[in-house]
Length: 263
Image (cartoon, rainbow, N blue to C red):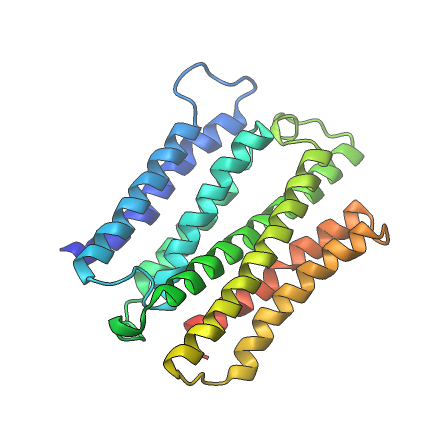
């Protein structure tokens, strides 16, 4: 019975999509319940489901990469709720929620036994996975913000002032939030990788295809570190940075692919 609850997160995120989409398509916001309440409820239910599964299984909620993806989605949505408050706009809620639906659906579809025994899931393992999934979630957030910047730039350049373009945050705000998410996400992913290395050294755990797995993480780190460095030196415009940020989703997908494939 408890195993069936893994389908609750994708369903609740799908339900939360509709009020966000309706709010975006309205010319004027309604005075009824703010849409962020739907996001908060969805995140709360998802968090409760993860905790319940962890208690039922008697272990941490990320014994496999698919379970870790569900946790990463939770962090992604938490970062969105913070983003919504900082940007003072709910126009980006729909794409975030759609991504949450996809992520939790893939997680629910794949059930496999935990890769590591409970006794080796130490505090280092907890730190490694927590930092890693948080980093991946923020890097995904950065890519979505870059996509929003490029869309808003195209709208303004073409002088297409639609209802949606008026509700999306301005270019300066999107640019600032993108750079923050990219930088913090890269730092967290790097720290998570380092903690993972120390954990494997502590328990003498061999890593299969270590070169391939390390390469995906290093690629993601170098990509986002390069964006920050080039931007700081003024060698890249905001538009070029946004394109690099959008393409930065590729290294993130590679890291997830390597993890789910057991590489």
